[in-house]
Image (cartoon, rainbow, N blue to C red; front, top):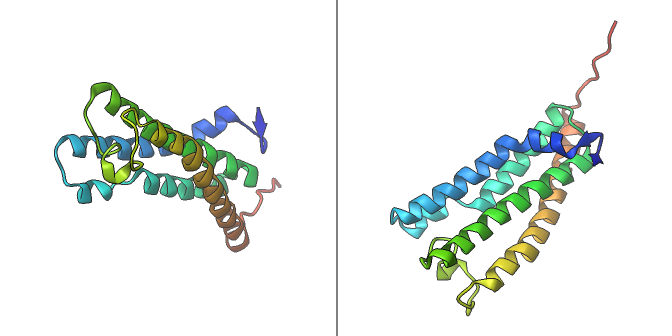
Length: 160
């Protein structure tokens, strides 16, 4: 599949450190929760915020590495958002599987009245989480790329 002149594999290669960053924040939340840290401390390490930071960094990479255009930004946003939502879903499924609540299934972070298997919570991440975060992230990412191109245009390298 070719998106904006780049294959999907190239997108993954460009975004690999950002996938790692989101996963590190996700793992840190789980470790802090298992260690008994307060929810105020754990809340400082948000997967949603990490995903937003990763989107901004992805746009900067796309611009400064001349990786592509707006279609590449949208692709990067979708990949990063799906990754972050899948990690959260994995934490919910893990919590249900071991029968121990974690930070991702705590009542203040879950759907009120959710059934014991957290199906509504998981469906919310698969639909609303991916959908809204992708739309908002793509809009902000494309706007940021437009501003970067207007304010910091990269001159093409011409051979003499």
